[in-house]
Image 1 (cartoon, rainbow, N blue to C red):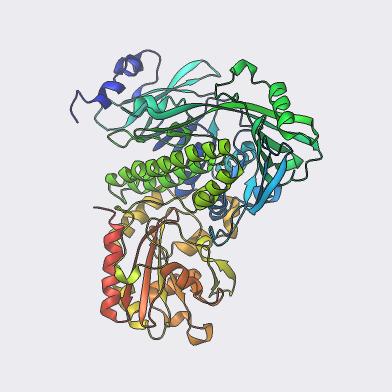
Image 2 (image 1 turned 180 degrees about the vertical axis):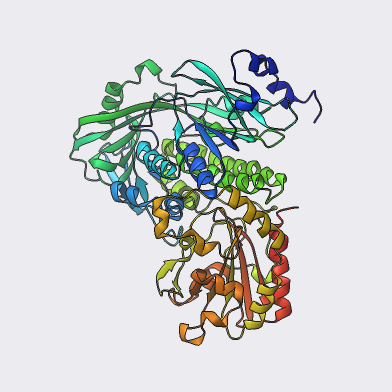
Length: 628
C-alpha cells in the first residue's frame, strides 16, 4: 500500500504519532496486546466477544457506558436468533423469562367505518412459509439479552471494560502491521493504548470506529416518520393485549402493540403529523405519546399503571458503503453498518448475526488456518443482508401508512426474511453452486433447516442443526442411505480426507490459545467434536436401522466421530436426508459442508464406489482451502 493511501493518511493523526508514547503513554514493551479489540457492548459487540472467547481468540471489549442496559431498547428475538442462542447453549433463561408471541392481529378504522375493528388474525410465522423450529417472536428487553451474554463471557474468563470510550486508531510504526488503539479511561481520566491485529466497531449508528474506515459513511434516506416507544404495564379493555397488534387509525395514525416480559406491553406510536411533517422532537414526550395512543385506540380504554422506558426515533434507512478498511483490519458491525426502523424487530437480530459471521472468520485467519482474503467475504455477505434489510424496511414502513391490507401483504411476502431464516448469501468463495445432481434440498448460501434425527450412540432424539455446538468449526455431513451398500464410498472418503497440514497447525494453535470454556461445558463436552480435527466435525446421517451396523463397522474417522452418527428415522416421508440433500437415488451419497455460522457452504452427490468417495474427499479439501 502506498504512503499516500487514504487509509494510512486517515490513521496518521497527531494523536497517534510515535511521539505520543513519550507524552505520558507506556513504553512499547508494556503496552497490552490482544488479537481483537471490540468497541461497544451492545448485542453485536457482546455476541462477537462471546464467540471469539469461545473460539479461543484473545479479545478486549471496550464500552463507554458505566453500566449495562437495564431497560428498553431492542426487545424482539426472531426464530433464527433463538436458534443461534440454542447453538450457544444460552437460550434457556431467555425462553423461561421472555414472552412468546405466535400471532398478529390487524385493527383498522376508516372515515367510512370510524369504529376501530379487527380485520384479521394471522399466525405470525406459518410453518409452510417459514418452517422454523421456534415459530414465534421472543420478547425480552435488551438488558436481559446482554446479561445472558455478559454472564457467559465472564464465566469463560472475559469481561466488559467499562468507562472506556474509543478515541482513535493507527498503524504501529514498527512494521508489525498491528494497530494501536487509544481509548480514554474515564475512571482516571487518562488515555491508554492497546495493540491489536483487528479492531471492530460495534458502537452504533454514530460509530467513531467507522470514521477510521475510508469511504464507509452511511448512505441512504432519512424520513419524516417519527415514532414514540413506551414500555409499561397497561390497563385496558382492548381484547388483543397479549397478541402482536398492528393498528391503523384514520384520525391518529398507526400503533404497533407488542407483549413484553413481566406483564408489560410495548407500544410504538406514530407521531408524524397527518400532512407528513416531522413532529418537533421537543413535543415527543411520554405525555404526548400517551395522548396520541389514546386517540388512536378509541373507543377502548387505555391507561398506564407504570412506565418503565420511553424512547423516540426518526425512521431512516441507511447502509455504510464499506464494512471494513482496505487491509481488513478495521471492521464495523451492527448499527454502525446499517440503520433502519424498529418496527419489524430486525436491529439486534441482524447485528448479532453480523458478529456471528465475522467471529469465525477472524478466528481462522488469526490462527493461520485460512488466508487473509477470507475476511473479504464478511463485507460482501453482510452488506448484502444489510441492503436486503433496508429494502424490506422501506416497504414495511410504507405499508404501515397504507393500512391493514398492504401491511398483511408485506408480512407474507417477507416473512422468511423477517424471521431470519430467509437471510441468504450469494454464490462466492464460501457458497459453492451445486452440480445438477444436488439442485434440490437446501442450497449453498442458505441456512440449514430444522430436522430431527436419532443420535446413534445414546438413542437420543436431537435436532441435527443444533446438536453440534457452535465452536468455530465446519461440519461435513455424509448422507448415506444404506451404510452397508455405501461402505466403499465411506472407505474412500475417510481415507482420502487430506487435511493433515491444516489439522497439525490447528492442534498447535489451539494448544497455545485454547477455546474458552465454562463450567456449563462439562455437560456438553467439546472434545466429543474435536477427536478428529479442530477445524472440522464429521457427521454421518443414514437411513439404515441401528441393528444393521455397529459403530465398529465404520471407518476409523467415523468411529472417532461417534457422537455425530445419526439415524434418519424420525421425520418420516422425505426425512432429514430429503430436507437437507433433496432427492437422491438409493446408490447415491450426499455430502454437505456446513459453515461455522450454520450456512450451507457446499453440497454434492456421488455414487457408492470407493473412487467416488475419494473424489468427494478431494472436493471437501478444495472447499476448506477457502480460496488459498
